[in-house]
Amino acid sequence: MIKILVINGANLNMLGVRDKTNYGSLTLDEINTLIKSEFNDVNFTFFQSNAEAEIVNTINNANNYDGIIINPGGFTHTSIAIRDALENVKVPKIEVHLSNLASREIFRNTFLTTSKCDGYISGFKEISFLSAVYTLTKILKKN
Image (cartoon, rainbow, N blue to C red; front, side, top):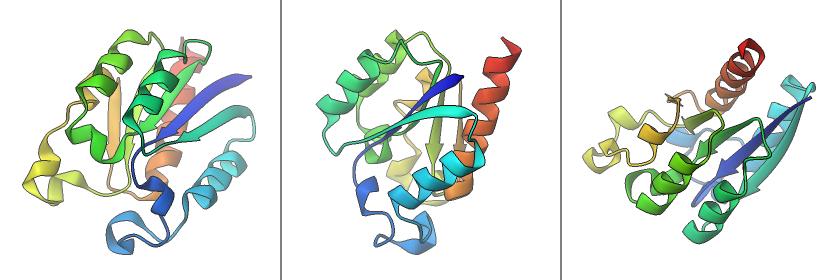
């Protein structure tokens, strides 16, 4: 069974009460449940933290997974530490964003972490996660 680590960063624990136009109306728990129900043949581990160091430690210990899906939240634009941790992990990685970052504030157009992932999906709210799981499982099955 494919094992995927899903990492969510800062403020994603506030989904459902944050700006629903950008992030959708689902809570993070509801998104995780949706992911599991759509892909019941995949073993998921879900992790969320507002602390950069906890995310770095989780990534550094992720080599026992087949792949990583990460939504670093605002850390995408600021965290060299998360970027470096992603670079060190040798499993396929997909970055996800619920909102369309290209249509938002200019500071959100700086992507520090994204270049250390195999690709990214942005702008489709919870469907971004489903698309990432679909893509990652296709990559893993092909290899």
